[in-house]
Each structure stands twice: as C-alpha cells, then as structure tokens.
Length: 50
Image (tube, rainbow, N blue to C red; front, top):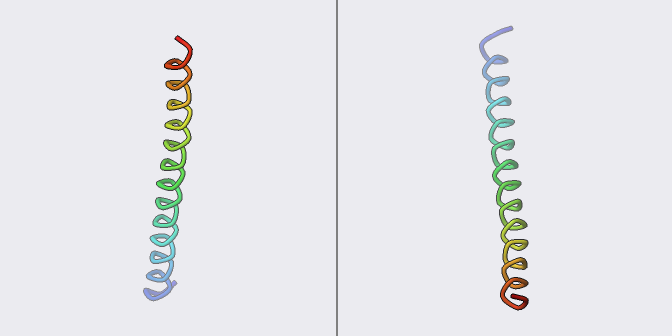
C-alpha cells in the first residue's frame, strides 16, 4: 500500500467520522425536541388539571 492510497483511506475515514458526528448531533437535537414537547404537554396537563 503506497502513501497516496493510505492518505485516501485516512480521508475516507475522516469523512465517515464527520458524517457520523453530524448524524449523532441531528439525532440528539431531534431527541431533545421530542422530550421537550412531551414535557410541555405534561406541564400543560398539570396546569389545566390540578
């Protein structure tokens, strides 16, 4: 394996890691939004039905 193909492979790995991070951030953001929506709904229920 020469230096060039090694470099390409490393860049590929970096790209994979980068897109994985983006996916994870996206998942976390969506997860928080869902949790926040549920929490808001629960809060509304508690406020309207004491």
